[in-house]
Length: 159
Image (tube, rainbow, N blue to C red):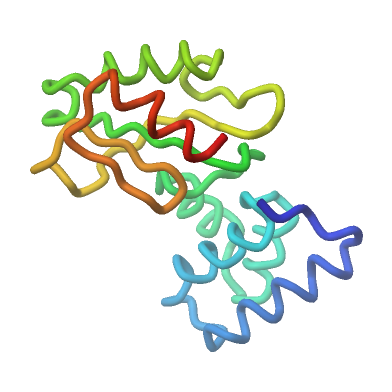
């Protein structure tokens, strides 16, 4: 995870560069927010303000998009974000059990971040892999057809 720039000037410069790369187009808002989140590790308020200013959009619209999609975070997260699908197929096939094992293994509740800052555990509405339910996503990697016994093995890759 990258860290926040040391100064507001650095933040503004980073946002200007990202927005320019996407042609200052409102239609590129999702891609811009994705790049901003990759740059800072999450979407800090000052970054959202700068995105809105650079795109000449209302801050409310930018914030609404940033908070609507579960793959975006407006709060700091751990180095590795673990997302557990909560849609019906995953739920019916054991997502709750996976959450229990993840919480126990990491020592955090759903929505929490480990004290060392290594992991954040979050729900997500859908990963789009219903055929391999239950599923989780760690960073950009999806794991499906999971059992509780798979969780410690998967987590070891990230420790």
